[in-house]
Image 1 (cartoon, rainbow over the protein chains, first blue to last red):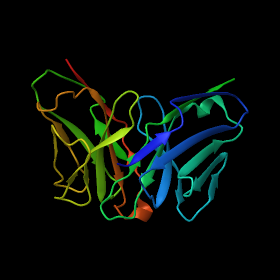
Image 2: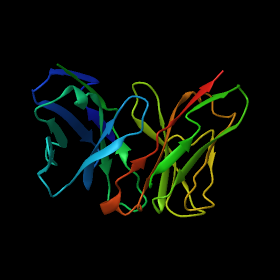
Image 3: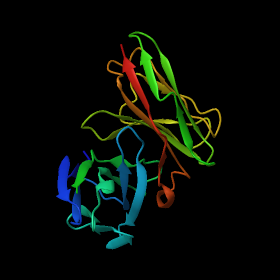
Image 4: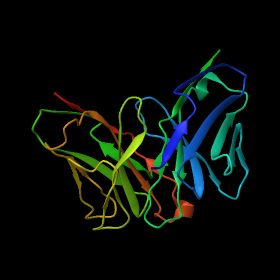
Length: 113
Length: 115
């Protein structure tokens, strides 16, 4: 069955460092991958989408890579700030009609000042 | 002010009672979704709907029911058949289920507690 794993449940880093979150998947060939941010007690918010034919996407301090050979996506936050502390979810999408996104469990990032 | 709303934010239910969670969107999106989130778990899909009067079961549909009579509304009923209903419920919408536009917009969630 399809499986999506995010590298760890929690990641703690110091302010100013680069946070790197990992999303691995098996038994699946996604057409694209999305990353969302979720704050406690709130709904997730979309951050970035990367397609299978794209290697890298950037948005301000965020960078996402997608390696279909390794079946892995890396999500980087450069110059991290305490306000970046949240849970980050990756989600896989398929081109198959009528197929909804598959979400990972998320990684909770804590940035300390 | 466009967006997706869920009500109530907190809901308490006695065992054996059915309860309906509201979800409304004014984004003119065709597709709507219901997810359940438990501590340490990812989002698990309950039901989704691509168009009005049509919906499909997700991974954990047992004990739940939905309707989609209007494009803007996708209420979820948690029935007494759901054995462990205490959870955080999230509603989402997207323009369509076309793969290239499947960014989801989430509501603020409803936290359901069974007493």
